Image (tube, rainbow, N blue to C red; front, side, top):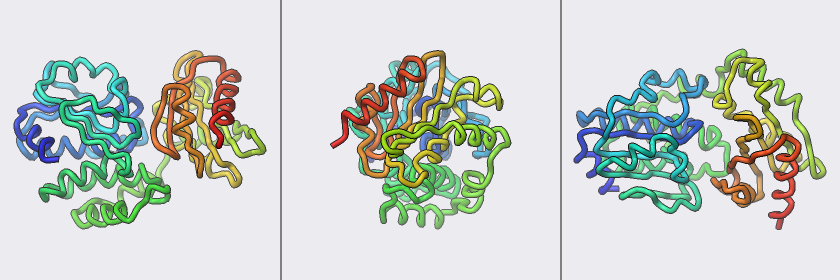
Length: 313
């Protein structure tokens, strides 16, 4: 932890990059580190290979996401990226930076930076960033706001099985430091665009069940996205409707990003879906994982079902 803080203190310019299709944890941890860097008078930019999803447009300072102001940075920090390819086109900045840091909580992370802080037992990258900054009493209300965003979303608003006593203590501390718990909860869980609501309705109607209804697959096609004017980047959370069906043990979301290319997300109540995702070169966590699979829709479904069956205990 101290080596990461020392690297930040030493740098004059910092670039903080999250993964493709950024979620709340990615966005929250990136912005929290940016806020800390700004407090030190550093030049600090933040972004990812993808635009900020519409669902997170409310986040404070969201307009600076992907506003890259320099061709070279002293320090490159990757957050919430389980593999090197997750930083996409920002690899050129990673390669040219004087110092590199990688902060993550995914299984199987091998450490790609000069300084690596990986804790697969942590609920979120925001929990790890909290530990880094809390160790030196460096958290203010602005930083707490961003960290609470990621802590809440990556624990399913404290409903997932990764909600440990440590997570609840961290949430308490962030509220103590001034995180806007009510405001964030309202924006995250009680606010939704008409377009996203229509997409959810269409996805629920398109649910298909397999293996004695223990597996539920939602397919989100390009046509479905175009119909409501959304992008694949705006589908976060839809998979929750699959795993929420009583009796379903594995929920799957298939989102068509390009022709014959699907982004797959897995959620599980008990099964190790990280093992399933690894069959296709993906990964993640025991009960939440992802990968990409190429092929026609029905062929992709067959591949997923075969992997689920082949990895069953």
